[in-house]
Length: 369
View 1 (cartoon, rainbow, N blue to C red):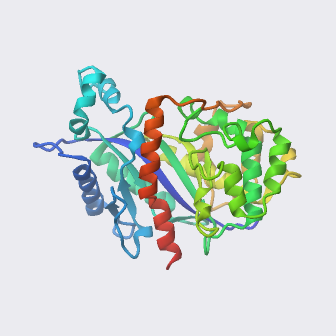
View 2 (spheres, rainbow, N blue to C red):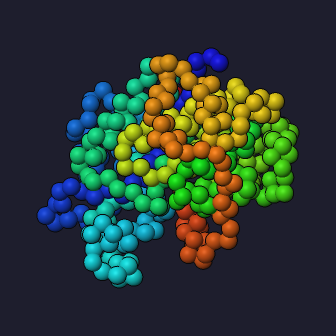
View 3 (cartoon, rainbow, N blue to C red):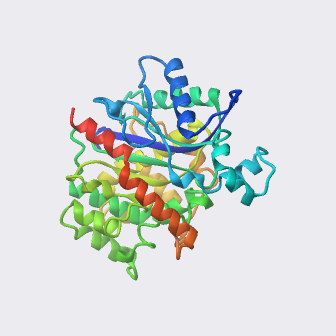
């Protein structure tokens, strides 16, 4: 295939603990985020992207797409008291800790770091830029994670960011074909996860359908909106692969939401490498006639991804830990009925996402240039 790159963005959910606590502590999460931003901007390579805080989604600048953002996410505070106890930061029982969440934020900052719009292409500097952010944050904070954290990777086509329908069909067919292989690759905390549901087994649109029938439904889609409605059940973004941003005039981004929380930069680079390589392979080899030449297991997925590797663009070694020691396939765990607590959290998350979607905001800013 032609060695064309893609536009990428990464969102990393982290629990950050200051290595040196200010004498008066940190009063709130906004102050924590502002301190993180000031430290990064004062120490990073001046030729690399700047960073800003955007907890409310109200930051606006002509070139905001080219900067890193720091924001919050309601889903990564679920287990904050228990995490603090396990880390030895608190001695109280979890129920008592709930009363002290504001105080805990001065100890442990639950934040999301969102990248600029970057290019996954030949001789691109995106890896060095991610490493720079990680290096500076790691010197300022202890980087931690738990089961509430995830790593999300966004993929957009180059140029005007417009996905063509045939490419999307190939990507969707590939997702269905290899979903049981991805289930092996992700850790237990990302299986049966309500924030990254199975695009097939948790989707009423595919209920009772064979794999081949699912592929047929994809190929029958006439436009991008039909694809979104099919793969994300009429606009539900909380699937392993989120296509809902394509409602924006056929543009924007595909989001892979199944990556786990990470504490090392190589782990982050690995999930980006996997996502971008998979999408690039899917664009060329994701048709119902070509996919059967690949087995629907980890080995088949590995061979499939290998078809997209381009020297100077890909660095496959970052994917090695993801694949290492894994084989076969697993039927995805179904999410099932949510508890009242999880239903409340889902409602809070939907409300937050309606108020801010920073990656889409960056893409809109980028496409307006």
